[in-house]
Length: 245
Image (tube, rainbow, N blue to C red; front, side, top):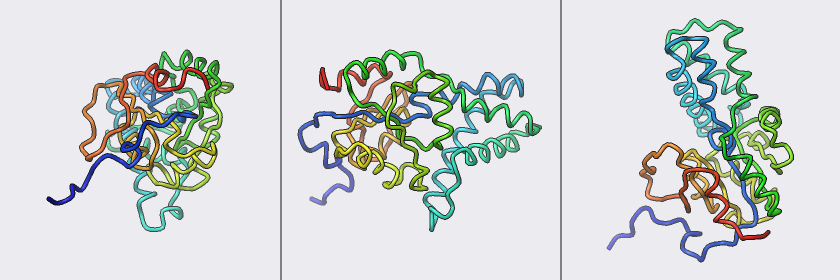
């Protein structure tokens, strides 16, 4: 019988790892990227939801394009620029007359994205357990510092790792490799948490123990593999950790 082309990643074939640290994706996981929809709806009545969704989709598409293209590091653009480019394209696509002031107001919302309701409680619990809890994100360092400070999370998240240092966006291996390098742990002993299914799958392939926060009840990706764990809120992180660190 032929070997199937896909199967569980190697780390799922071994006993569960004792988790030594947690890394969170930022955008969509800790911070609600669709919270920009309120302002988008005020600026463009009747188009707020469509603009928010298209903007996010194009933003991620651009990160993949610049990373997957030949000479990917040469095509790298900071995430702030990618986000602005995606916003401008989306406005044109939807036929919205967005002037410079409107674009700037929407971009500024990325510094003030709303955190999900349970996050502060969970992050405080991790700190009380003395569990290392950080971020591994496509975001630029300045973007991340601003949104973390605005949410009041600055004392609860360390390290804050940005792919800017390797000039490659997730799901490139160089991006995921930042976690084990910074924490001094093998990937399987790090719980990588993302609400983006593609990110959870990419991190699983890299070797992390993963938790997909499926907030919307979406179907799993049809790629022949699954995240290690699936939950529906950040509360699902805590049962996966040792009772004390």
